[in-house]
Image 1 (cartoon, rainbow, N blue to C red):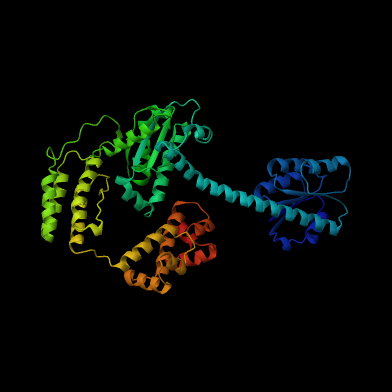
Image 2 (image 1 turned 135 degrees about the vertical axis):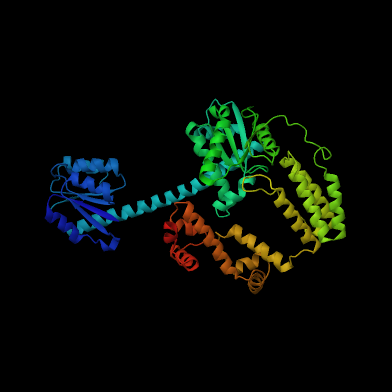
Amino acid sequence: MKVLIVDDEKPVREAIRYFVPWDKYQISEVYEATNGQEATAIMQEQQPAVVFTDMRMPLMDGAQLLEWLHAHYPNTKTIVISGYQDFKYVKPAIVYGGTDYLLKPLNSRQLIEAAEHAFELWLAEEEERRLVRRQTMQLNVLRPLYWDKVLSDLLSGQGAFLEVKPALCGELAMPENASVCRIAVISLQGAHCRLLERLHGDAGLASFVLANVCNELLSPGSQGFAFRSWQAGAEVVMLFWAEGVQEAEDLLRRINESMLLTYGIQMDIGLSLAQPLPEGLQTAFLQAREALNGRNLLQKEERIHRYKELAPEKGPGEEFAAEPLLEKLRLAVLSGDDDKMEQAAGEWAGGLAGMSVLTESRMQRLQEEILVVLTRWRPEAEPALTLCYDREGLFSAEDWGNQLKALLLQLSRGNPQTPDARLVQEIREYLNQNYASDMTLQHIAERFFISRENVSRKFKGVTGENLSDYLTGLRVDKAKALLQHTNLRLSQIAELVGYEDEKYFSRVFKKATGQTPREYRRQ
């Protein structure tokens, strides 16, 4: 806490310095001024919490100073010390919220009581302000989640537009008379790997960053709002209204340009036709998702995919003969011959690479047909395949073929995971999702219904690493990302990665990295 003494009489300033118990209230700095003008300059530079002021001073008197403080620093506590008890001197102290009015010559007991009253009042109000700031920060964190849920519900037909319209207009600046909308759906699949590399593997942060980039371009013109979707088939959704309906394509290109400039990536985006608002919200969302799923995975010239009446996709016999390759795959699987399975996977990859058009929906159906074959062979293994993309965001037939080869070889040799390996994998996934919580060995043991000793032994046996070291490494990695990409205080970062004590967090971080958090952030 800082204090300012304003009086043109030096003995008065010295008396206040002598009698007031500064150390009791941990007051680190006490400043002095001889008139109101000097006081305003010190206030602007140091912002003291409490001001002792005389009333009659040159250049700027106490009444003018009190009025200025009330206008510019309303939380500051003021104690008036004057040699006059006329009402014209007392009135400003009353009007502008002075905590006490003391008469000269000063009485030490009254001075101490007035000072302590002002200090305690300011400390109590500062604690209230701190709590309000904390609550506001929490609300600011939760508010995007609220809109993610509300708007996702509208797109799924589970929300009531009229109930949320006042908030849409008041908080998101949607015009009252907005009657037309468009929806854009952004997929992170093609750009996912590169974006995750930039954001240290945090998928949640990736979608959060993307939504923020979109809103930076949408907000100035009140043209729409971007949010993280709770619906399958989309990571980030943009709802356009008003002028944004006509300018949607231009806005989407600018968003991709911004992402390319900042992160070196571009996203594939599906865009709906204009639809009536709110009746057409669900239709617009389905159109945007269909446009995205119907894009050609093998071309990169156009990243904005407008909805249109899609031509029927070519059947299996017209461009890509899937049935013969499925039969070869069945035979290779039945033979158990590794060479035959690798050959079958290679033929699949070569066939896909030779196609001129391959949509996401078509590829997903092909994968489903393959998985039917593999599931019949090894139902207990629950085989799975995913789409593979290169650094340009295009489907990589080569990487996908290698994935299929690895899966076939894994299935042919039996499930490589022992029961202990599966348990440890579940523990790691649980820690990855809950690292910010208070996590003890006992808690994990109870969560997975085994003893504490078994948790430690099995985890070390499978991974070669102590569970506590793994959790610490996970938390430190998350803290590194927050230190590098946010301006959060160390105390906030410590709390977000599971440490209640900032000093303990700093010790753990330095032990793991050789640097303090501040040194790492500066670097």
